Length: 370
Image (cartoon, rainbow, N blue to C red; front, side, top):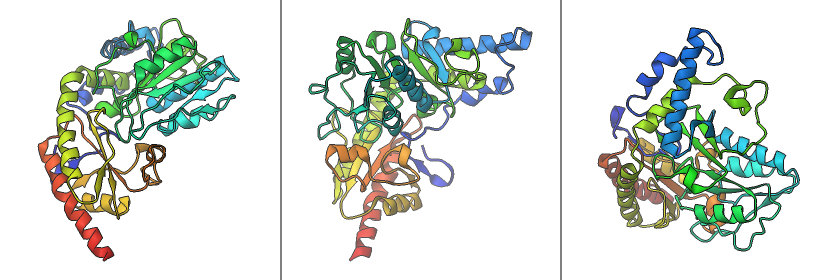
């Protein structure tokens, strides 16, 4: 959706603008009392927190709110999942493919048994066929890739981990709000989500923990979150997270975003020197391209001058613009990529602006070279 000064925001995989109603829902709780206190103000805060938790649980397919541990975001949730698994099996390896998010890979590197990297194919889809999961502390799998959008075989990975009696963690940060899923039916032990990826507030997310599973907390020093995550709870953040999820119909929203990115993929792929990296089996909101003969950074700047905000590589490398380990694992050039991602506020005008600007920016840059 076009914003101030006719801007077109197409970087929702990094973060998405707040949905309507989120700020209004949060406002009464921005100065909430400690929900751990027995006075009236504390009990009111506790009631708001637990109501929000139940709404989050219902939206994500949990059996009950007690499966939801509120965190500062998906990065912390990943850290909690990995730390807890390593503490249960100190000498076990952690399974994490090169296409996983950097927070997953870097926490996996802390495992006493090292990291097992499953191979990936040319689309970035992982395979566990040649991987021995016996004795591993944790198996990680993305629901869908954060750079190219590849959907992973989550059900197959969960089944393989179950057979090996190994904990399995699903990174659903990019999928939540865009793909309908049921945590209970999925059978995973742990699942991480972040509110800001789907139009909720920054600084809040959740780790879903299968009922009956106990993992050692990463943050200690208090009994909050049923002794699973110390620190004063963010009541306003939880209410905002629940409000954002209340406004989501994952099936309808996923279908609308798929239509928009299909236009992006078809239109951009027809431009000379633009190669499609995103496979057919993909998350609905991400389109990724390779750029022949030009570096990514000047393309980003040229598009920005045309009023279009996109990104190169993953959201974790935005300040560095380093070659993408995801694309390198897929066997393609990792430093000449363009990621375009849509969200709840994107419309056809935004897509049109990108498709109009891209060939002009590329032509201008190639003209400078010659």
